[in-house]
Image (cartoon, rainbow over all chains, first blue to last red; front, side, top):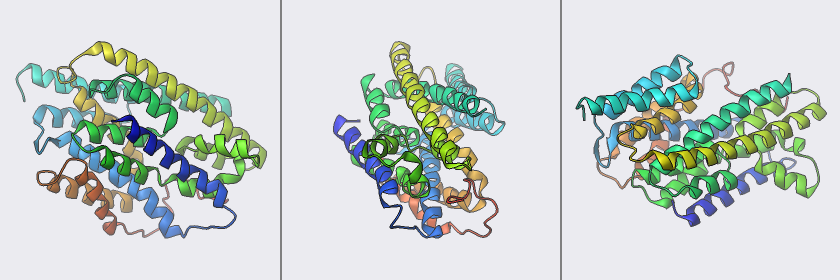
Length: 102
Length: 223
């Protein structure tokens, strides 16, 4: 993550945020566009979850990783606190690797 | 009442921030990069996203692009509640930086404009401090941990993202689009440079069909 990338993302994000209050008297986004913007955020996030949970490089990332993330997902679904989700996922994966699951 | 709710959300942000700091450092970044990101970008989802793409070997350009698409949702937020920031240029500039999911939700939940303004600023300022403090602590602690693979920290990252995404998946139309998108990303990962498959997932939006209006995740704007 080079500093330039951080700065570009920061500047772009600020521009997006600043545009709303600035343009609110002149622009109304159609309902459909607003829904699409909100959905695209979720689509990107879930895609990244899938890729980082199931792959490593261009291959399958191994059962230890996949099962760990699944346990974390289950914990989140059961409404456990955020820290518990993360710790359970990490501990499961680490434990599986310890007993020899790749 | 309001302050109690803000405090609870701020505490949650500190914990999420600490996770972000620790996971970023575990992925090989120096401690100050997640700290800088949090101060300047101040949008957790896109920060996780960008670090995740780079950690998976993706290009910084893909990371920036994905982060910006993710943050595009702030545009409608600003259009909906832009007037609560205040009229002065300074209030607009500082207020825009504090425009996040939580501050928007808190402002929208208030009927009275003065209370909406108070809620927006209380939430935005509290979260800015708690998020950044959390990230700093997480990054410094993460430095002391060592090899992320042994500790399963590579599983912590997708699990954290999944926990953040889960509430939005209750909406059926969004869920369908996201599942199609995830399938596209997985199917193309063996053939494309890292980072690109995640962006391609946006094609899943073609499966996005809204049917009913009752189950919107956010309160309707411009009430």
